Length: 304
Ligand SMILES: C[S@@+](CC[C@H](N)C(=O)[O-])C[C@H]1O[C@@H](n2cnc3c(N)ncnc32)[C@H](O)[C@@H]1O
Image 1 (cartoon, rainbow, N blue to C red):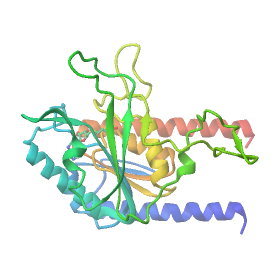
Image 2 (image 1 turned 90 degrees about the horizontal axis):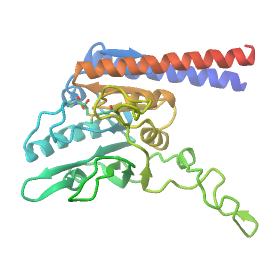
Image 3 (image 1 turned 90 degrees about the vertical axis):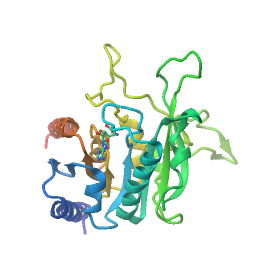
């Protein structure tokens, strides 16, 4: 079989799988509020929507839930209600995850009255799940609020969970860090460092998505708590493969969807707020337009 035929067959299989997962979602949940080739976003409460889906259909979930700190998209609950609610939707994610799948959970800090002003939410939540915890990643961002009485907060965590402790995806070569201090150093005539770069370690430095006059990030949307594309790109590349199904039950501005598409994955998103679904839809449309334009330019350049 020629390379072209193999690639065409892979494409056909991948489109069939996409149709299967999206038609499964459609028959369980009805029409999505936003749909494009490879993405479906359903407006509604994620817990309720996830409970209607069949088990083991998702390869990777990447998400950041409300932190219960009074943001505009939150209904603040008591601490125990909040943790119980988190446990409920994490349990649903576990049920939806395939046996070799993964779950990346981004969490910040909250106040525990009388006990702590900024307690890392992972301390309160990490073992309230049947998932197996592989690692905690610290995401360090350069800028943020300045403080006088405490150190200025500059990090959030990602908990990297898997369903099986022995069988999970980790595509290290796809996410190696090329910023190596001595790339040409040799031992016994062999390069000491992998030519693709080093393991990026468990502290990641990526800027936050900023807003404001003259300092707004290019990727900024009107959503108040947007993931940076670069962080999610690393997670999607290391914890999933082309054609895999990615879920984000709190999809907000659609970062996970854009990154999933950029990497040839299929994305299912849930979002309770209809105006955020619109923001995500406009964002994905704009990405697809840019992609189409870039492809047309490349074809012109090749004289196809
Ligand atoms: C921290 S933000 C996620 C932002 C997202 N990571 C991004 O890059 O834009 C959390 C999102 O969860 C949504 N949300 C809150 N409760 C929800 C629920 N029960 N079901 C689905 N979405 C919910 C909020 O409206 C908000 O957009």
